[in-house]
Amino acid sequence: MNIKPLFYRLLILICILGTGVGKALYAQDSDSLYVTSEEVETPKQVTVNNIFIVGNEKTRKNIILREMDIAENMTYNWDEFVALVAADQKKIYNLQLFTTATVTPLFVGDEQVELLVSLKERWYILPSIIFNLADRNFSEWYSNQNRDFSRVNYGVKLDHNNIGGRNEKLRVVGQIGFTQALLLNYTIPYFDKNQLHGLAARFNYYTNKNIPVRSIGNKQYFFKNANEDILLQSLNASLTYSFRGSFYNFHYFTAGYNDTRIHEDVILENPNYFTHEGQKLQYFLASYRYRHDNRDNVAYATQGTLLDASLTKYGIFGNDDINELEFSIMASKYNRIGSKFHFATGISGSAFFSDHQPYTLVRGIGYKPNFIRGFELNVIEGQQLIAHKNSLRYELLNVAFDISSFMPIEEFSVFPLRLYLSGNFDHGYVRDANRLPLNAQYTNKYLAGYGFGLDLIGMYDAVFRFEYSVNNMGAGSFFINVKAPI
Image 1 (spheres, rainbow, N blue to C red):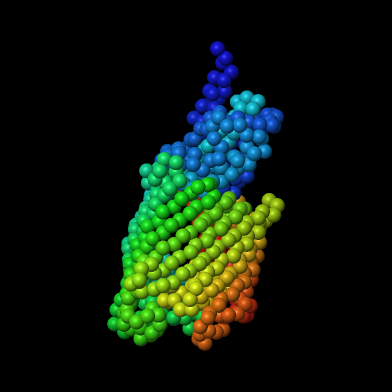
Image 2 (image 1 turned 45 degrees about the vertical axis):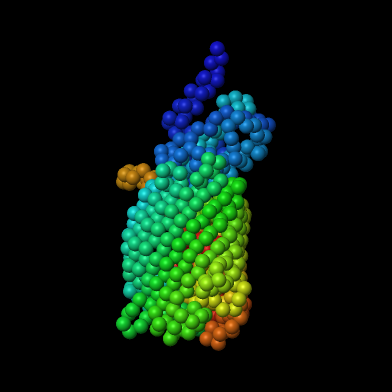
């Protein structure tokens, strides 16, 4: 009996039980590759005997294996193997189910390896209190809305981000305050054995007593009547089918319904609010969306590519109140420059194929995801737009603190912190076919903004940005934002 393989198997099991192989690896360290011995000579090829997964107390093994190109009993040349290990590690982390994800090859022979996937799960059930601003960004609320605390939303929210360990996501929101809303959202990424097909269902109902009815001077003009009546109520429902044929490519097909009703006073303020007579806007919609996402970190990327394009038809049947077609696109690229610098660049744009849209569908610079730094206080509305955003970033800090001595919840026992200094330049253009005089200052003109900022990335990839920007119209200010700009 050959005891050598048994010895190696025992060594693997000891490593697994101890979960001490390699070092804890965070998304920002995902290019590293660790082996059990520095003395192992680099082989020309390796065969993967087994893949061991530890730390997935909730998440099912098949959800993790779905993200891996590497498979058991397969042989790879060494350079290919190294690249696949790094790529699989990023994909597993980008599930956003784990605070750490490490893929470690363990040599059990000259050209034989066992693969250890070591994970630390996040906290998946997140009840929270809603207390946020109704405005587009903090600067809009602080400057344009005079720090009005009546423009705050509050309520309760429940997120379950891994129901049954299958990466299903459930969100339930009950909200009052500036916007009264009820939201139900459920997503299952795969419902078939081969993990190719998924479904998502969404229901949203909300009402407002204070709504934007137009823009004046490239700023939103809000209106509420003397009796503080409900001015707008909207019901939206949709069902989305998804197909993931390869690791980085996703296809989404959505069918939905919208029913929006407004108070008669809104028509008095803006007779073209719906572009047709009446106080309701009802229609069915259908859309196709393609997404290619190959980034090292989906929350704040430093390397990789992203392409997101969609085509949406508003109004499917003859009795629908609208007949519009919209195309939108977002493309970004991230390149590392040495160990500390990286450059991020991205283009976003949208286009309607007619000159008049209901105000509920108006697009422009200042509405997500299209913005230009220095114009955070403005909305530049039109039928077609393009924005090009650029950031050169330098990593000031990249650490992870062990706070388990006073944090009893294991999922929050490590506090990662990254800081980046950024130099930014954005530019773009909005075409308004109607050439509205009230907004002529910024529409149909070249727009540009530049400045510098500090980006903070914390626990669970939360992003906070502190920036000072100046636009090409001579206005400059300090802005606070959340989420990555590109």
